[in-house]
Length: 459
Image (cartoon, rainbow, N blue to C red):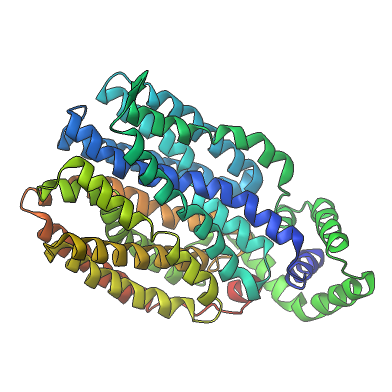
């Protein structure tokens, strides 16, 4: 256990350098395709309904199937990455997603497309969970929020990209329907998988939690050599870490032996409150986030705006998508994450109601852009926050289990939104606003995390 803390302490004291930038760039490629997939459905959904390939009810079923697959994938790979490792889970998921998105691009019917979305969802479901866990374990605490936000900055550039591709390709028919080309581009993620597997190191924190100490030490030593950390400093850090953390290590070891399973540890006295808080948080936040992200072009169609104009407006709104996490990259480690999440949740509720009430195209685009800015900023901050609340040995299990509720909620909310939409767009946004007010209320019960090490937060 002493080596465990020496590995964590040595990772914490590494200077930010070329390794961290390369690591974030490679991980962000996976995040990019995750975001591409999530927002692709929104832009293609309007095209599917307009062409008659899907009805509104079938579109609801397709969204629900995708999120149901994500729910299973989050459980399977999110919690499973505590056993198989962060890197292995990351690569396997990307391959599954790419294969079934490719199949979906050639789907001959609504049923085939819906089935492919379910299996692609299994692959993409835990991508963000594993990325959040992976980055949190590899980056020092003083830069953790910023680097998680940077993965989202890169990821959200996929939103204007898929919006632009949809606007260009959907009206065309070169060999196959234009929307199929949009899906084919998403399937290109498979080309990255093997390179990622060769380039990314496993998380040393995960390796030491599995008692694979020599492997963890080897990776940390490689990083120290690359970042020019002296051996003398390393030895001092190790000695200080052992002496200061030995009591906490003994307590953690005893508690771990008392837990029959990693899942059971989520419900012990130390983590029960955090687990319940995140379950409620995730169940509600997905209504506000995906309620807008997956349905915005459809909302515009239902307000009598034509397909091409809906795609035009959606493209203008999408251009702001990377700005939210970009702001988070500058503020996440300066502003307490817990209170930032609370403020943004209330802002999403207010700006969403504005989108529903405005009739002017300019104001619809402005209010839609404001919703997008706030939701994506919110996403970047809470993804950093949730990965800080559990110790390494159960981090992916805790984040995976609680985040899976967002996927299940999104699947069920697809039918809720479709039902409420029959009464108009405004009632839908009233439901979404109420959910985000609930998010603001529940996050107030969470701990503050800024500038605290993962080991300190789990103690």
